[in-house]
Length: 252
Length: 309
Image (cartoon, rainbow over all chains, first blue to last red; front, top):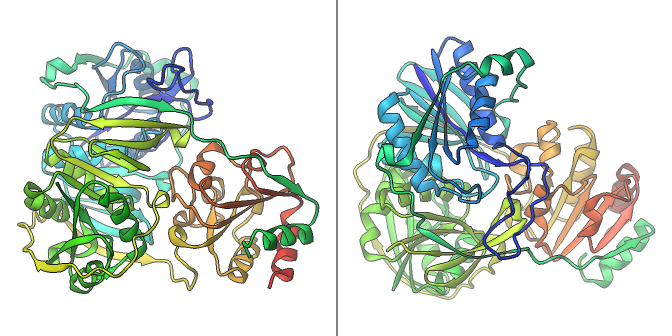
């Protein structure tokens, strides 16, 4: 079975986000970029499926700017076998919407015929939480979102999902789309020899036009602003002082 | 213009708080029809009909709709979509599972976690873990939107909308429910609680979380946790407050041993009063706290529990 793992190049989660003065978005020029943390978990899970003998090939795919090559090399260094880059934008500030990404991925799935697609549950830039569900809809496949456990058994998979009230376990028909949550696994670090080896692994380059997908956004960005800051509060000296202040404020 | 609102239904019961908050958001868009779907949903439909501002309720009951499986629920919504310009839901994990699937089937974008309605096509939503607020305008014929409930007041009761029954769409038969593991708790639900007491990495262990829980029980509060505490195995994931967990806006939020990472602040900074207890006086949580106490939480939290009430 082949595993397809879409990965997104996003601002590194440790970097402080700055809104651009013209309100068009967040400043991404000369900012450290990394693989979306949830996608790292998806790559890790794919590699573990291969190590467990349940998968024979792991293909990473990224859709975005040319620089997403680096993100794919990270996936290859972790252990993916090969990679596909679909160039769909020139400017690093252009975010391809989940619907267009899902359409391109659906075309890639038709070519590659994976048995499972493992996605991160959301990207930490647009926080949309949509691509996996949309891909599943376009393919008419089953979906299992927010996975914290995955057990593939022949033509079905048992997936435990992180939901509001606790955990839900469902059984989905293969092929399937699984979006992964934090607690599924802890991604490995790529070793130096593997980083070197990754440079020689195959990386195909395509464009959105190769798949006949129009990536014109459906949502126009009207403005981007800093959130309202909270007014700074006061320090209290003791628990007694705290209780007095809370009582004054009518909070307890 | 008409709005179809997917009610939050858990095991046949309406989640009133989440649904009523989404009704408030949806009323700004047009006449609201609530869809109550599930293995059993009639009682939930009756409850939704009483929410102020609801014009009509559709009840869809079918075994295939039980447990809110995404494929059958999305197929049902798409079968009804023709009559509506907006298809909306509270931004619960259930709706986040279903609504992007609905959007893709309709060939439109989804607008997730909207925090404000500007007009019928334009919505505000947080991006980058709440570090920026983006206003987006949809050019799609239908708008599929989930609303972040913490940003809207719940609509009151007193309505008496008509209730109709609709049939389920054909079951695609792609997935089956196996089991739920719902945390048994007498505490209020995290996202609708008036008071939340949260612990972070500073709590140090799963056992030590008992002091956080003791304070929560004294205050009749829900218990929350930072992502660091969840990652470290001190607390279950469904307690997680933050961008990748739950977003809460209680009247009082007590953060103990939480440094205040951006991703945590995104989940609680709309709380009315924030109390921070941390022994590191430089912790960023103090920048958003109304009342900050620089103290060891292992002394201060039990003392607070004892002296309250």
